[in-house]
Picture 1 (tube, helix red, strand yellow):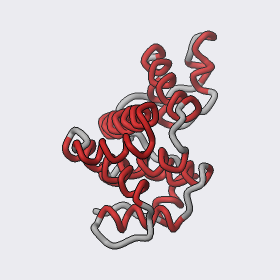
Picture 2 (tube, helix red, strand yellow):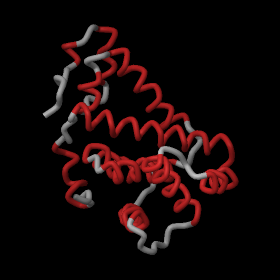
Picture 3 (cartoon, one colour):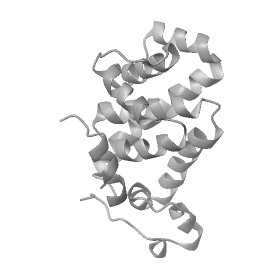
Length: 182
């Protein structure tokens, strides 16, 4: 049960009703502070639509954060979203396997992205050698975009956990297909 109420467009002033054009639980909770919801949405919109980072790599980085944080909301939403951006079930299983040290068929760049996401999530920063490998492979703009993405989603999973945001029913099949570790 969420710690703040889930609001509907009718609960908001006319100028803030656009904040619920995608009325998922997270947005319905965030609009308790419309200005925070708008700022949050600006960064999220940049990550999804403005970044030059390859969308498949972006989604795998986000999934890595969700997996490590054991965030049912983040994980379920981005398992679904990742499919829209080129990830396969095999990619998701490979992420799980790579995280646990099992061999995978993932290419070197994808493994470096996952390693960077793990380091930022678990250690607070990407290791110098991981950053250098990514910078060499994708360049400065995309390595900054990747870093912003990983940092933002580390904030998202903490927000989700603190506000106790509920997973919507339509996303629960993704948790059944790829259950989080206990």
